[in-house]
Image (tube, rainbow, N blue to C red; front, side, top):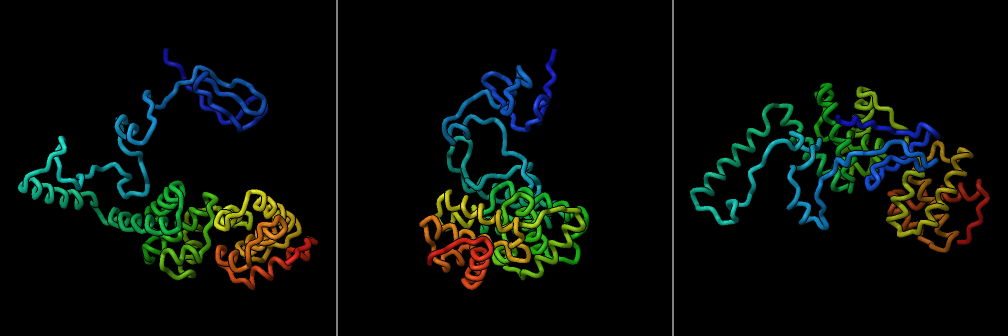
Length: 307
């Protein structure tokens, strides 16, 4: 008799969502109270093990995973560019010419209609912008899904492909908690900041996206890493920002400037001083902004800074 696998997302005893799937014991255990929620789990992973990338490639028997960042979702086949047979031997001149023609026709039939052509162009542009911004794969996938939804609802008509692509990336960054400013995306996409902002607001409204505004805390990790600051300094900066947000000192202020000012204060207090110019360059704001923001925070939060 086939066992029905039950998928659980919270503990029935304490309500905790922190669950551990222990495949050695074939159990699902709650990290909160220790209750064994399920047992006799089926391991759905491969039966083989690989200790490096080469072994994994050699032993795998399936293709690449489905991806929304390719117009056909990666389901179509591609004729390899290497002119070699299955034994690794070079092909004759006539075979090479035949393969060249096959590649050309195969490339043509991969894009069947106007919608697929649109997706092929847009997703190539999406990859280019994402690479320049150093965005992770989950953000690229989310942006590709948003762009596809925009195409299906006919939101592209009358707007540039590049503008909608940049707007989808901006929305995906906010959705996935990987904040990028409009200025950064405009610079990477080589587009006007106002055009991206206008298109983003239109797409968000039409697709019913409910995205929370970015806060100064969202930028702490990225700016702190770029400045080479320790975890202690970043924690101190978060502490400063929490106090500032409780007193509503951040409202009406640009999140990047406030975040940079908090990092500057924390670096000075903990002996990992960075200059205002260094912080300003990383945050993409002016030194005057850093100076104004840190003076406001220091004064309102009673922080003594020795410059």
